[in-house]
Image (cartoon, rainbow, N blue to C red; front, side, top):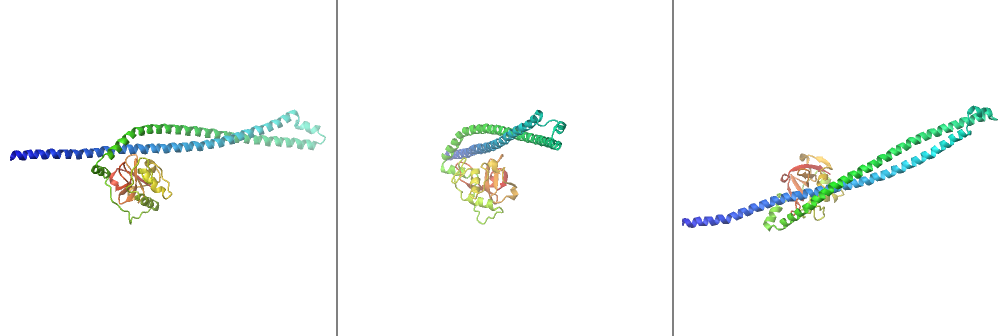
Length: 334
């Protein structure tokens, strides 16, 4: 009997060990997938942010090029006017040299009417002085125009160099993202290959909450409306770089929820955390945009009661979770 019980215990132990090991394997898989998802999401946000910076740099180059063209036209006109006016001064000076305007005393003594001679001499002196003064002013104006042209040209070159630098950074990030596409596929294959029970564990890894905002009142009407709109997308699938109306990533959900009421917010999580008005955690109102993780690589919409509405990872639909499920970064109000 004792031998039978020992054998039975061995059988039970052997049958339980694989189950425990399997549970541990699943937990480790979830942790691995979670880290892989964070890497992929972070890189995706970084590339989007760099693309926006490059687009802004392109717009600045175009604007400065227009300014440079305008200042070039002004400088060219000023130079032409200066040359024309200088030619007139030279003509007058030449006329004086040829005797059209000779020595005032000779003109007076040689004239039939001395008063006319005096008047002519005074007139020529006045015209010459006025012309020379006008030329001096025109020379100054031309210099200002030339300086503006040179400054505009330098600004264009600086902007082009900045754009080139950003493009290089973007290309580097894009290459990294290309490398991560393999990891994306790996993650997608892992998620899609999970059993229903393990898939449920993945979906529940952040602690989703069945939450209603009925009766919730926010001090910021725009933010409150964004939350109400975003809540209609609970259950919508996650997609890298997606901004609705049916598939979202984290910043895409924020962008779309505000855009439905005509409010423009930046496209990426980092830019969303750099815009708007800073808000402390204690002052959060429904609809405020909340950032998580170092570098603000993830965002969501504050849903009140320490809850956050967000799109988190591939295979996990839009959910409401506790703010404490992720490391807090900061918040902004739009």
